[in-house]
Image (tube, rainbow, N blue to C red; front, side, top):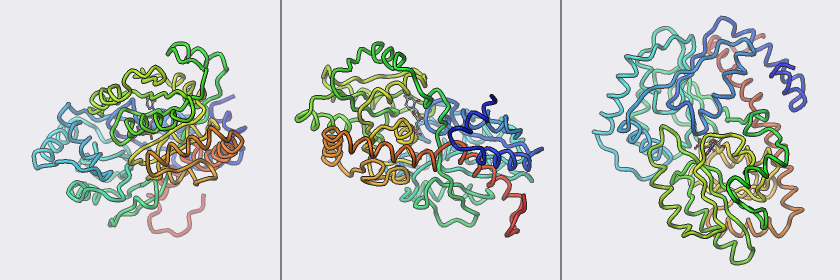
Length: 404
Ligand code: UDP
């Protein structure tokens, strides 16, 4: 069975048939994706799954990664935080660093695509190379309340794109170009999300010396302030006063994220050698993440800001009860008390975790609803369809109806 056909039992054959029709309309077009890391974080996660599937559909999709030194990624991380609304000191020097690295990438990167699909702010200035091809800027960040200085700087580049894509309606901005709302997705057949035999889950728990003797609460995330790992430890401590449990805080780093070691050190300090807190700095290994998610009783995502939160979709797809912050793209995935529990504080999160641990039937119902929501809205097949429609729409700008 081809990779494409393997999705039929999950989403039905008509969804796959639609994808094939749309793909034929894109034949001859090169879709060039550009981002800032090939590994780590949600964008790389999605592209790694999407590009091969587009190729199998016959679409000539490619992927290039910009280069940047430590200084550049320090600045882009500050931009990232500031766009999410976090207070950051950003001066003229930072914009100079950004432009210097951008100029080097403008010189070195060949923007050969018929459609150049640029992800997030790091490569945004490449649009200065635009000729008669079409450019899309894909924003994965919650820019509902962005730092105005950074946003205005980016706007100058965004204006040269044909279209901008945001993950949630609340992120859209006043822009002179067309805007599209397309939420991210997970791949149900990837190593990260496929079913696993119980032995694999057990092996992973053994490898990290995590006994399955009490309920396990887990947050999987890069060690990043905006993921609030220290808040997660506080939640665990509050729950632990009433219900004996373990906490797994697992994450790796991304090559475009310079802050993680600092955050990890803080987390380790706060955990203070509690033997029931398992802080894992993971290698890039999707089976390990999958197994940890499946071994958990509750998945937490206590983000302070979140563009979408693939980890939430991953947990819901595995039919896990999720407690997550009521922020950004998480709100798309969790309807409070229907497909998970949303929280606004450490106290709220610990209350929700206790409630779910004390009411397994309720937890199960939320988890089942969560999985169906992901099946209907957040799988790769829906995402591919919307991206292909977006690509096609660029060639039919003035038409109300396009016959496929
Ligand atoms: N992830 C991973 N290893 C880690 C931490 C995270 O593979 O150590 C994955 C996680 O499973 C998810 C993605 O990276 O697929 C993170 O995407 P998300 O949207 O949750 O957050 P981002 O990192 O993009 O802010």
